[in-house]
Structures are given as C-alpha cells and as structure tokens.
Image (cartoon, rainbow over all chains, first blue to last red; front, side, top):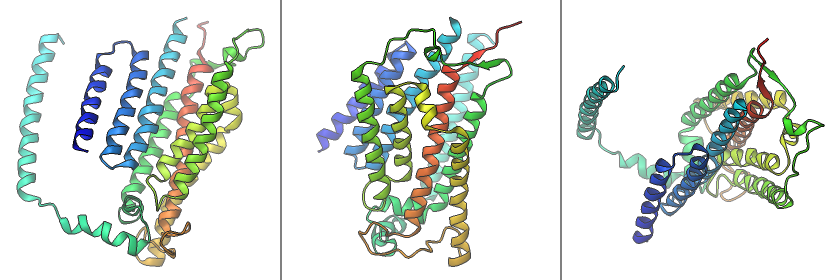
Amino acid sequence: MTLLLALTLVLVAVVGTAVVATRDPVIQAVVASAFGLTLALAFLFFEAPDVAMAVIVVGVVAVPLMVLVTMAAIRGGEE
Amino acid sequence: MTPVTRGRVFVVGALAFGALFSWGIVELAATVQFNELVGSYYPRVSIEEVKSFNVVSAVVFDYRGADTMIEQLILFAAVVGADLLLRKQRSEREELPRRSLPEREVPRTSAALQLAGVVLAGLSIFVAMYVILHAQFTPGGGFQSGVLLAGALLAAYIADEYRTFTRLTSKPAIERVEAVAAGAYLVVGAIGLAVGGFFLDNFLPVGELGTLLSSGTIYLLNLIVGVEVTAGFLLIIDGFLEQTLAIRERAMP
C-alpha cells in the first residue's frame, strides 16, 4: 500500500510538471484535465473519496472546459 | 518597471513574507496543541447522534454546518460575479450561433460523439441521484451531485449543440432556483434556531441508522446544496457558452 501511495505521488508530480511544461493553452487544458485525474487517484488511495469526486468534477471537467471555451472565444474574436 | 526593479521588489517581498510566515508557523506550533478530543469525538458520536455512517457528511452538514453555509454563499457570490462579467456588454450584440444560421452548412456531430454524449448524460444523472440520496452512507453529497447533474447537461451540449443546452435550461428559472436554494439553507438554520435553540440545530427526527430518510437536517441540507450547486454550475456554463457562441463585438459604426 505504501508503494502504491508513493507511485501515485510520483505520478501526480510528473503530470503536474507536464502541465507547467506545456506551452499551448489548449493542449495545456487537456493535460490539466489528466492532472486532475491523477489527483483524484491520489485522493482515492489516501482514503478521501469525497475530495476525489470533487476533483473529478471540478478539475477534470469544469476548469478545462472554461479554459477551452475562453480560448475559443478569444480566437473567434480574431477572425 | 524594468525587469531588474521587478526582480528586486519580488526578492524583498518574498524575504519579508518568508520571515513572517516562518515566524507565524513557529509561534503557532508552540502555542496550539492538536485537540485530539474533538478529532476523536466526531467519528465516535456521528453514527449514534445523527445516524450518519458518513462522518464527513455529519461534520460538513451538522457539526460544521455554518462553515458549509458560508461556502455555499461563496459559490453563490462567485456565480453572480461570473454572470455579471459574462453578460452582454453595451459594445456587444447577440447573434445566433454560427452553426445555427440557416445558410451555413456545418458538419453534423458524429454518431460516435452523439452516442457517447447520451450515454455520459444518462450515467451522470444516475450517479448524481445515487450520490445525493445516499449522502449519509456513502462518499459524496450535495456538492458532488450538483456538479454531476450540471455535467449531464453539458454532455447534452457536447452531443448535440448549444440550442439544445439552452432549450433544456431556462436561465431566468435557474437564476431563481439558485437564489431560493441559497436562501433555503439560511431558513433551515433559522428554523433550527427557533426550534432547537441554536442556529442550524438538527431539529428533524434523525430516524434509524441506515435508512434512506435518516440523519435529519443533514439530508435536507444536502438536497438544498445539491440544487444550489446544480443551478450555479449551469449558470456558469451557460455564461461561458453564451459568451463564446452567441455574443459578438458590435461592429464599429
């Protein structure tokens, strides 16, 4: 179990770094969404399923959606 | 401000913050002892006292119900703020989303995406109902359920188009539902004050452990928060979609 927790934390760190390293905001939104999933896994393994559910809906769905829609709005204005 | 000056200001600020922060942490660690009495009290009594297997729900909606009230008021304020920022400004005009214009040929949504959207919407509604009705047994509650329900309608937009989303949701109605739900939490708290003697007192019968209608006001407050969060997220999603798809800069005369 300790190994699983350690692996999850490493995964969170790696994907979190990937979010920062991604420069294109549109791709970044998708990567951030994947980061939300790894966070949800971490919360699940640390026995906090309530927080995991909140992360899934907010971090995986809501925030990336808002970034994508905002990007679409900005690009639409440029046309 | 040149980058060098900016860097200097940052270093000074960071050092000052670091010093104050470390000082605060050291002081805090010296004076505050973790009160294990409270920490072990909630899990021990929540099952007996308010008949909730889910200690998190018992803490969030009963023992710390006032905190949750403030949180849902924060969400309410955030939704109002987002709605205010995303409204149609005087320099903008509203038009039909381009893909809805009659003369425009648009590629149809692929069958795979439509199917995925419908399945996702159905599943989301199902899970949301389960989560909110079992808040006192299993993880989750009003907040999680509310976002899931709003997500189901979002899936409908993804599977079809913007007009489907607006057809399924009436903005004035959702605005009222949102306001009423935010107020209802305060009303439940006030009834607790009148009946039980203190704000947000669990005045309803707590029922039997493990039955659906148990845990008194925890159940009621969960439903209220669920409705409020659903309405709030729908308003935010609608605001963003409308801003992107239907509102354009007014052409300069």
